[in-house]
Amino acid sequence: MRPTVHDIAAAAGVSLATVDRVLNQRPGVRHVTREKVETAIRELGYVRDVAAANLAKGRTYPLVFILPASDNSFMHGLNAEIRQAVLRSSAERTDIRTIEVPAFDPAALVSVLEELSREKPCGIALVATDAPDVRAAVDRLVRERFPIVTLVSDLTGSLRHHYAGVDNIAAGRTAARLLGRFLGPRKGEIAVLAGSMLVRDHRERLEGFTAVMAEEFPDLAILPVLEGRDDPEVAHRLVADALGNAGIIGVYSLGAGNRGLIRALKEKAVDRVLTVIAHELTAHTRAALIDNTIDAILNQDAGHEVRSAIRVLKAKADGLAVIEAQERIRLDIFLKDNLP
Image 1 (cartoon, rainbow, N blue to C red):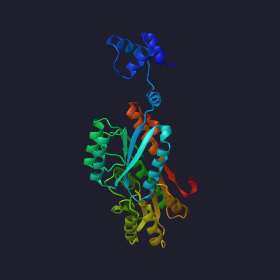
Image 2 (cartoon, rainbow, N blue to C red; image 1 turned 90 degrees about the horizontal axis):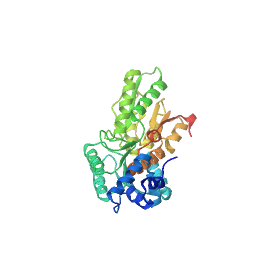
Image 3 (cartoon, rainbow, N blue to C red; image 1 turned 135 degrees about the vertical axis):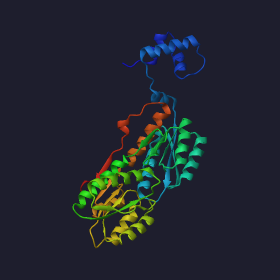
């Protein structure tokens, strides 16, 4: 049986009130008495249940999520999951708010982080733009003892405490293998649509994709990356222009902006067969899977990512360990045949 504060009080020969003052590092305890209590704690192997203590004290965790202001379905879904977390706030003792910054704008992100350093929330989760100034701002906050979690897209070489997202190199490799196997012996060109090479998840997906294509499918040539900034209108224009190239037989959409991709495919690819792999299961990509506009979707569970970020931030705020296996975000592969 786990030792309790009653056991500590008995072993040290002191009152429960004295044990409480020592555990909470409050004044009013003589040095010799404090040493007796601390010795009893060590000898009994007492481990404090910080979560239970915070519950008893009614502690609330103010948390901030920083997201890109973007008109794409995945970010809308991520926002919806955060709103669900807000509805659970009373049970989870959180006070969550969301700040939106212009997408792929390092200076705007740094400005928000600097403002938050003055507000002192219990933790910050952000979709990171991988830039030196952002990395430096995050590192400053970590050194000032702010728990930081990167969400969806990580921050290379930073001091952030945790990343809540999928393995994006593996995601890119998976996309390449699916596309190559679907195309079989065909030879031709592959169009790649990204949001921006400023974010690490897009760079890593491209890295994994190009590696497998070069190793396994040398007859498929990857064209220069189209950067649609995860904007459906920009993506539509870029893909529509690219599909004027009759040599394209496959498309890999490694970011968002898939509403624009789907519209371009329906308009420009009606007279030929294209194999298309995209990311994130939304209402639009689901419909495109069902009508065979898209062949496969690689999906990350936005709800799991939000819940993971909250758990990790609360644990870090309390100085507790993170259960890595619980926080691992899996990559799902959906075809029209296994849609949930």
